[in-house]
Length: 484
Image 1 (tube, one colour):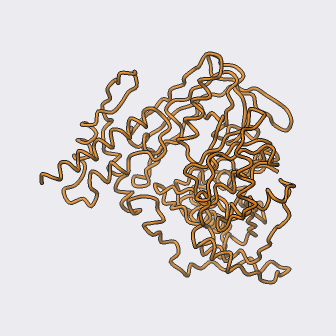
Image 2 (cartoon, one colour; image 1 turned 180 degrees about the vertical axis):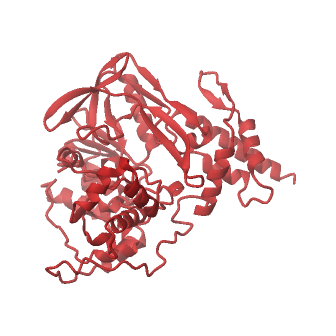
Image 3 (tube, one colour; image 1 turned 90 degrees about the vertical axis):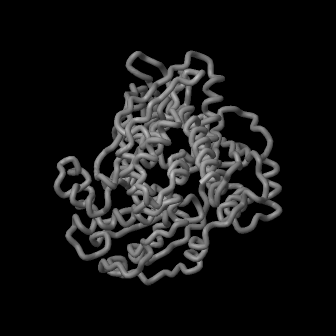
């Protein structure tokens, strides 16, 4: 059953079920909010009314998310047992996609099995029956790609065979990076007949924080007939990840037709308000109001994990460990599969932590009273301390807080009109603003800070302008250093 099908049956994401949202709060802080804030009444009832929590796609569950869930459940249930004595069942494959880091909120993308709370997971069952595919050769190929250790000649031959164009059109196209998916989506939208409507976000607060951390794009371009995905939870029937098609553009906004439990319904999509939270100041420092929609002629591999697709085109550029196995594994048969740009170097090994985890799997005897799974809470190791390599950032967590503090004091940067009508930041003002707030003895240099502010996956013209400005400033900084 796909993730969308599960959501249609009333299943919730763990972030929504436990009130974690975008992960901005620590477990202790969130537990206090759930206890005292009436807005969290449903979350409080969720935690107090269950005996067992089943979490799917566990490879993408980070250590911080698991620790936050553990703390919240234990605190609310006033228990000295991990997770407040709840039984935890995890399903998934750590050879698939890893957690996505969110260093601004202290989530460094560590695997959840590194947590002390994983002591509750006493029993491991390996599921070997494959239901999505019936082709033994394709199944073998997917397993080899997923593990990233060895690719047989038979699998190499199969991947060469599926490099051809598909006869049918309309297949979902998968990329490893947001940037490539956005470029493809923009190109496909331009080829779609009809008038294009551009929706521009309404922003407030710190502009640099928005450019660096906003998940919603500044601009959303739509046409009738464009495939889209919902990016927020609007109701029990209309949730984050639901696929639909733009059916009409009205003065009040786009009408999008979604399929839910075999029924199709067109609903009006209105702008959704999202916020940027500063851990350093414990407050919102910027907001963006934008349609909660993204084009999905193509999407990233991360967004498709859990889907079952009849037809898919996979692009292998910039592929990372686990991604190719996940992408190829979405399709039901090789007749609906195309793989573009494959070579053996696309098969990369997983981190040593993953291979060691599978080597050390143990399975203890189950007890009828579940005492085997209910362990007293005790933190006995230092696995929570992130290393520099884990963070995906140039800076430690304390330095990230310092950046947040500085971002909150930078005034809005003046903008100018480029030749094509786009607004771009004046680079001199940006550099001057950063230099003004940097302490004389700060461990953060201007060039490092500018590098950190550059988006890694630019998806809008403004973000691309930001990259160009950042590169210019970095070059200027290095030239200045030659004369000092």
